[in-house]
Length: 266
Ligand code: BTN
Picture 1 (cartoon, rainbow, N blue to C red):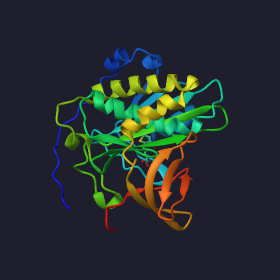
Picture 2 (picture 1 turned 90 degrees about the vertical axis):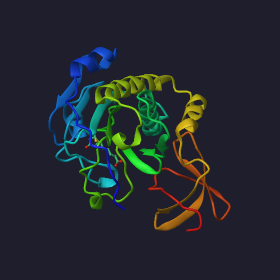
Picture 3 (picture 1 turned 45 degrees about the horizontal axis):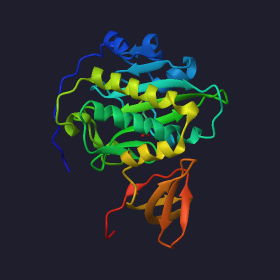
Picture 4 (picture 1 turned 30 degrees about the vertical axis):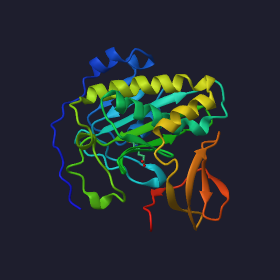
């Protein structure tokens, strides 16, 4: 189906303003490019703890499961941050979910409604993908690169190259917003979520997760190790695995899956 899109001109980001309004470690560490192969690759190669990398365009943007992340210069956000943890934590596997919460909160800060996180690493607005998260760790150093792609303007994107419904923020949001405001909110929300990670409280996390989790209670269907799983989404556990009450009546936990929302009757 052909959709109509709002076309909004975009300006380059005002990095000085962003630095001024992000009062934390990010201040001096924002690397901003017109074009880059991938903001994740840049930080994997040369990122220090806390560094941020933003590019207006990526020539080799990467998504999960080896997919390409289509990254033209149309105002979309290509953002990565290098994060390090001094102490090992058993909650590493929740990092992607925590990042998803931070993104959802930042989008709320600038006025978006009716969005949420689709386990494990997608940002959704009304059944359509608004953004995705790619976590990559260069080794056992406790360092991780958190990559975030957010669609802002998808009017020129060739949808035949993308295998699921997607949307841009320009079409999802009712109010005016600036990309600077979005980046500021994102950096601040990420900082808040990530800096609390050392003293992580799973119960508190679950309460926040429930606010943003769009899968809970949904009937879903997906393929796992060659088997089709159909069931109802229950909750996540301390390892970030998703609990499903399957058709067979048992509860199984999954550490990763490409879950598509399952329409009733199919
Ligand atoms: C997904 O497959 O949903 C994850 C997409 C992650 C894309 C972002 S864009 C910024 C960063 N750099 C990359 O090459 N990928 C991530």
